[in-house]
Image (cartoon, rainbow, N blue to C red; front, side, top):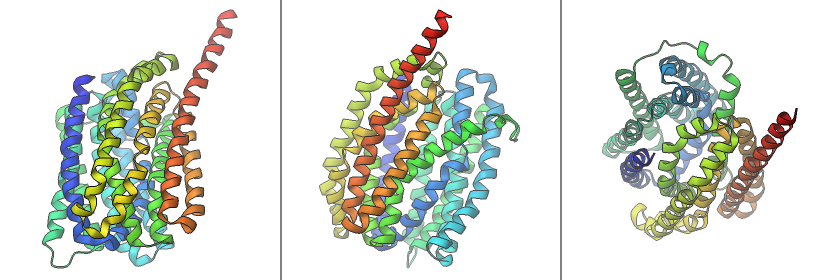
Length: 414
């Protein structure tokens, strides 16, 4: 587990460096208004992206981590599910963007962004999960680096254009995502084999797959919808400055994310023995998780004053927003450990319910506070939502454990 954590930390570290480079270049090339226009549409697409794989990658990890002989069966099912669902959701993203923005925006921004994210990046994600299911985390981290490198290549092409815009970046975004997906699938197939493409293995798994998908969708909603609403209700420039701060916040979560990736298959093996075992494992990881979240918070606070220098003076808002958002990293460290413990023990439905509830709570706060307070309303809604999620998931974990013990005690008496 320590070795896999180090592999993921190395991979995420390299990815972070590449991401930061292309992010700085992209922010400077587009400027806050064009960047905000892109982010406003991309955030909407990201809400749909988890349904492109319908949780099939998580189901692959669940079965292959417990029984490696099932790998090819569920690998083929994950690919088939991603291709079918991703294609359908690309059309849905086009329609939603046309209704919320304009049909020109749907054609020039939403369609290429959706192709890159809902098909290309989802295939790359599933490829990373395939290696993760066999605990080959060095390959998983390499795929994440591959995604970032393909994005960097796209930004370099954008930089070479005489006049760059959000529309140009959307096309390059699509190409880089599809390239990463194709290379990821080819790598997994070469090393681990190719299962028959088909949806049959997902029969009986659609409900749990939906729980995984709705969980990620809710996560995307309370992370990204505030950017869409800022773009819609305030301005593209404010949305761009806020999104830039959030991007740095996500980068500072890398230490914790590495730990989560390395331990995720283990939660399924522990969870096979029951909720008590997965909870015990989560508590063992808790000090490390808080340390990783604390390290990320320090990184975010240290980077905040540098943002106007790195991104340009027009991103002064980002330097103000980032320190206010920094406590979210500690909340995330808490909530992910409790969430993975519930998932590993078969309580994904509870996890999803909590995340959907918090997403709706976050949406309501943003609709109320953003028109009144602007970006400050988005900050406060994010803090309250992440704090509420951490508290509710740990409460569910503890109450779920107590209920399980009571049930087993009654069964023993009979």
